[in-house]
Image (cartoon, rainbow, N blue to C red; front, side, top):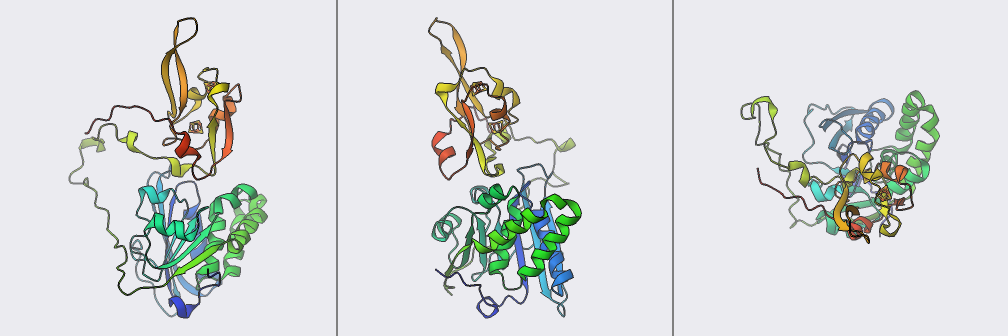
Length: 337
Ligand code: SF4
Ligand code: SF4
């Protein structure tokens, strides 16, 4: 396993196009801004940053794009990055819903916030060749009471040749000092730990391997074809949504033996996660009984834990399999629109 910084000659990254794949709330947009600003203001490079996101509601997909070139190379494109040298994935659950590695060059670098090994991420992502960098940014952020973005920036600086760690570190200091001075030192520690705690593995470039092509998403609805008023016609489409990527390290654990079926949790849950079934009690009366949590919809806000009067719900540091093993699925009827 190679834990050395990749050299320019390995990757010819005198310039770099970086795409950050994330969801709202993890700070990818700010990370992209800080990387581009560090390039321009502190590394003497030309830089560009833009982002694409929807309503910026917590949990919706976000992409942030950063282009960096030497000062004598002009950046002319302001378009989204379709064939990046580097992809940063801020939550491994994004692999379930997004083609995160689309267009990544065969000798590209994939940096992932994960507890998995590079071999496991290779299998999950489908990446054939290039470099996989794993960092448990969520764990670092939880321990430092920050967000994953500065840990991911540390991991990116460790392995992407064009990024000068000291310049990025100082950019983080400047940014937080101005906006949230109380969080500055915690974010510097988060960055340093992201830099130090990477696990990297290089999968040798292979001429026979064709990179996963970028497919530009084409919406079936445009300004010419959308229904009047922008109505969404697909029936029950939110049933299919998977909000698990919105969780930021924690989820509610449920112990049915402790539950008194009071319904407090259901009243505060913003996403209808709790599954109920009618059951008959020992006096022969039928009531609704809590069965468990449909973790597909749980964004980990933990409001339910706050209001539970017993120990039926508790805060749990999320691991790879808890939600998978304890999910209780809603039995919604699904109609095709
Ligand atoms: S708030 Fe707690 S005790 Fe009440 S139904 Fe929910 S899990 Fe059960
Ligand atoms: S943490 Fe609790 S309240 Fe929040 S979305 Fe998940 S189940 Fe609902």
